[in-house]
Amino acid sequence: MTLRPFHLAFPVHDLAAARHFYGAVLGCAEGRSSDSWIDFDLFGHQIVAHLDPAAKAVAVSNPVDGHDVPVPHFGVVLTMPDWERLAARLVAAGIAFGIAPHIRFEGQPGEQATMFFLDPSGNALEFKAFADDSMIFAT
Image (tube, rainbow, N blue to C red; front, side, top):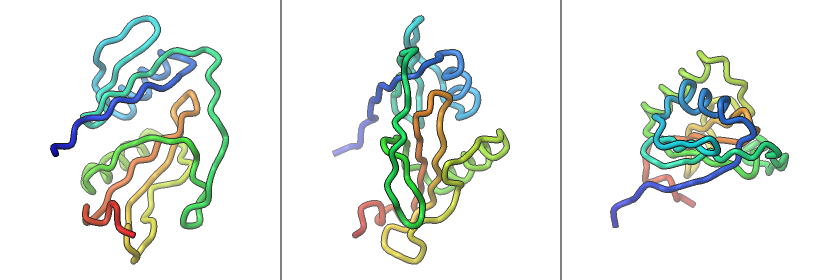
């Protein structure tokens, strides 16, 4: 089976802030839009920011490898070079990381580069990469 792009729709309280964050900061190309939603190309996947002026992020976390991981969150598994470029781009943009770019599960099955941060509406995002993609589902 060939992996297909996923589609994710999520709430934002400010479309202009979402357009800037996902477009200018993350570098996502913009697709269709209206006065209540915007499509973005997130590394080949379709995400849609839908306006909900009352949107509030849920402040829940679970401990993972010594960090409090926000739940829910979304993101993409990138190649290591793409992850490194994105991390450098976000650092240069002054993004406040909830969990700064680092290697998680170092020396263990599933070792991965990861980082967490919030969009302007408080939606948590995680981007990760594996030096060896066979470790993505390692136990």
